[in-house]
Image (cartoon, helix red, strand yellow):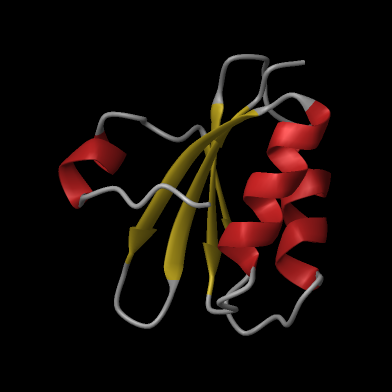
Length: 88
């Protein structure tokens, strides 16, 4: 289950990195998120942009499995903004 956020919730996260994976099909956005996660500090927030509707479910499952914090999703115009906090 994914947590839908509103725009004001998302602005409070202050993402340190934004990964634009719009147009990539599954598993592309998830792989981009995994790759980028190693480049940010523990406690920082990664924002992933994806137009693949499966991404929000896949990223939530991955984040929970590996121990990162899945913060939620904001629906934008034609894509989703997915927020993950690096935990380790």
